[in-house]
Length: 297
Length: 297
Image 1: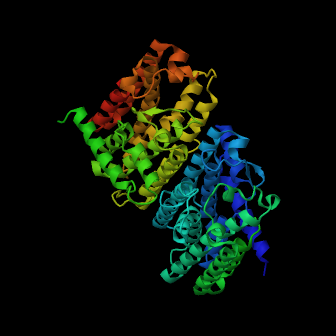
Image 2: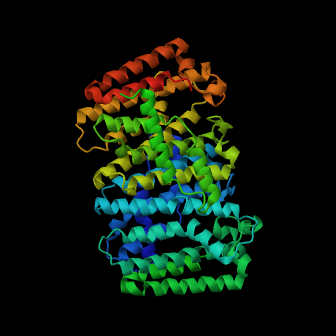
Image 3: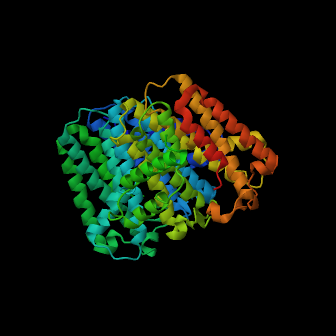
């Protein structure tokens, strides 16, 4: 049986290839915009979200190929959110994964438009890519689920709450509500889109996958917050300590570092427990939970 | 028979009501983001694009109700594009339709996120609103067409070309290519989405509608350029002369004012000619062409 690292690399290679095939060519106009879209998307990210799509597809018995289109869509939306999040009016970041952020490498207007166009592209491929072989009704369910995850009640809404909460003291419930939207919504969508590649998944399995996605979505953020305290710039590809310096509410700030770590562990255990309903098919999702929670970058 | 103004008002009222129903309530979190989304969308615009959806639906024999969802989606995308276009890194505009622009009334980050969330919402309602009663396959065709119109080969791409062309001298063909993307793509989508509310439209009629949309898309922009030269701030709701001052290539700059007007008239004639294939059902589209081309704001 291939190792976790091999399987992860297989997913990363698949989605990288799919993204390259779906992104507009730099030889077609407007070239600079297409260059920027490729710069931010094909940048060797960890592809956690794409891997969740593939692993969830595997968990419901679908082949890898079924996951290509939703994995691609999820990574396109993720890339767009990072580009907009890095803009001067948001987090004003210069570095992302060790490279200049999009508005630094290009300019602000190009970064804005590249993000906008990546969002459109994600919906376009979900709507018309023939590699996704589910029924038209199922495709529409996938698009609606995905749009909700991206929108004002999901990721974009979470960003808005995050901005408003800078310098504020939040209760744990408020902090988790924010993260369930900001990071959690797209992670949930990744897992559920992977599951949607089959149309005969029993509701109990879907509920288990949803519970799993909720736990890892929160745990993902806790790890992020802990790395902001303990991480090193060379491993992170960005400067640690910035969230803290910005007065952003974080788990370590709210709970203390060791209680934050304990909460991460508890969520990890919850995620694994939720997977029980999936039997052996959930093995890769279980390993991904560990990867997400114990990562060093 | 009701007058053009009455019919236009009927379309405006319908889409206003549909937008109000689809936009998230300001009482739900994140409230400030939802407020901003409503501020930029429910602002009494002319609703030219929504009216094109309804009139195209009428032209293929569909009832007004069939147009509500696509009309709403088109206005949401249009509103998002205006919000992003007004940002400091783009056109840096303070006024829009006589009111402070979104980033002036709120802040840049909120304007950015409101635009992002409006785009997601447009796709969400196209995917799942039961008021649209076409088949699932037809819905998917509508979403794909719409996503292409919004993306890097459509509206967002046109914006990128527009930015790159500031201070440049363009040939007429380049100028028209830019406008066919920037303004034309969404106008084309509005007309075709209206036509897509019926699934049995003969290809010749669709081709006629497409030719019509191309002509009015360009004519719309010519009128915009002429108003930038001749319009008055109180009528326009924004300051005239700004495109000229920014060194943006415009029709009057390229052709001279009277040749630009003549080109607008020729496109108007082309639009009306294209409608011949639709008989009496195209009457409202014909009147809208005149409205778009002869407007004073």
